[in-house]
Amino acid sequence: MPKVRLSGTVCGTEDPGRATRAKLLYLLFGAGWDIYNSNGDQRITLGNIEGKIIESDAFVFTPGATLEDMFKAISIFVGYQTLDRNLAGKPTIILNTDYSWDPLFGVIAHLHRMGTVKQDYREFLLTADSPESVLGALDAVAEKGMPDAGREPLKSTGPAIVEESPAPDHLLGNVCVFCSATLEDPAYIEDGEELGCLLALNDLGCVSGAGKSGIMGAVVRGSVAADGWTAGSNVPHIIELEGLPEGLSSFWLRPDIYTRMEVMIENSDAFVIFPGGAGTVQELLALMIFRHQGNPLMDGKPVVIFNRRNAAGIGFWDPLIDLLDGICRPGEFIVVNELNEIVPTITSRLPDKEARQAGEAPVDPPAEPKQQAS
Image (cartoon, rainbow, N blue to C red; front, side):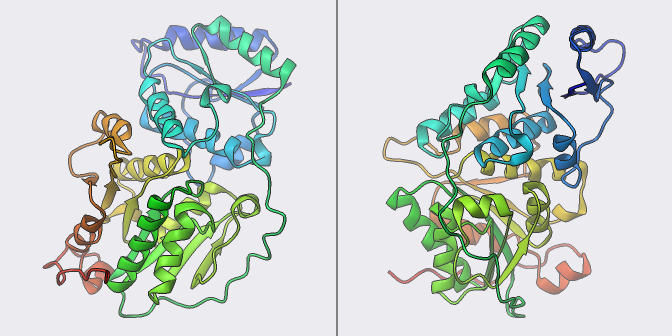
């Protein structure tokens, strides 16, 4: 029998979503589906989420969207975008009767307008307005299939081989830059190269998703050009789409996008959320989940959102910041509007290396960061 994975958690007998979930269970089971997570008591981690995807044939998200629910939904969307073979033909239905999913939909729609999400999310994250229509949506996908994400593998990507070079001792720390691998606007590419250069000039290692294209490739090029130390992680099926940048000092090949995120988080001391797409949203939500769980991988690590404004004065991450303001606590991330604010914001919050290695609190901030020569 086909297996559907149900999202969400039932919080006691008074949970307003309990009746809706019960009806969904009844209808899905009656229609021939076996159901994972029927009680809402299964935990998803970066280490096991790909396994949960592999064992499922469809995904249904319930009302009452939480941070973790949104992370899982955007992760599946990213999987569709990047042609994850484990998601081929598997539909995702979101029951949005309480409109709690609207903020996330608003973020993706905004990114579509900004050019970092090429696909219409509504063709991949199908919405339903009743438990009965969930069944109808599943039947429709079974009949018509899933849409084409509109991407093709590169003709040749070459082997994912990097001559490993350990991080030099003089580095103050490693900064992970989450950003777009598809946006090719010259202004954004220039910003990416400048950020990579500034990281290198200020003795900061550059960690990235190790894609050759878009802003992601530009950040690596900027760091390499300034003799910086660069590291990154990627997965085979995304390397086929984006290639691997030249000049990486260290590379961590991983089997899926979730363990890829985990190794990047583990090997970074700070994070920059640069203009990006659905994958960047996914990565930021993962950081916030780790924060809320008290995961030691996030101890003392600042998260800086670069809310770059375009000529019309629109902040790139305005809708995402609004979404986070409703679910995050003050201080869990910092917003800057200017490129030259990023490095000073990070260095003023990085603990001294010896204190960081000993697990101690931050000490006096380091010297004023250097600026790239004009």
